[in-house]
Image (tube, rainbow, N blue to C red):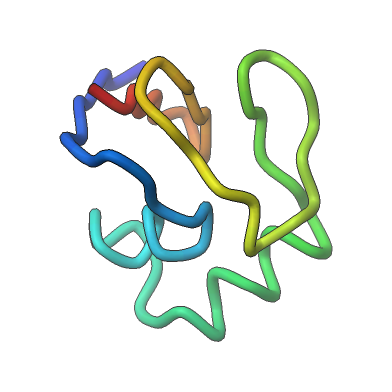
Length: 68
C-alpha cells in the first residue's frame, strides 16, 4: 500500500481524489465513490461531497491518504 499525505484545512472526498490525480475528473470521482465507495477512517463511505479534515485517512485503490 502506498501512503500519501495531503495538507489541507478542509477538502471534499471527490476533490481529494481528483487533486491527487487518482481519477481523471471530479465527475469520475463522484461516480466511483457513489458506486464502489472508499474507506474513510476505516469505515466505508459513499458520499462524494463528504468534508475531510486534518487527521482523516482515506484508502482508495490500495493508496492511503492522510490529511495533515
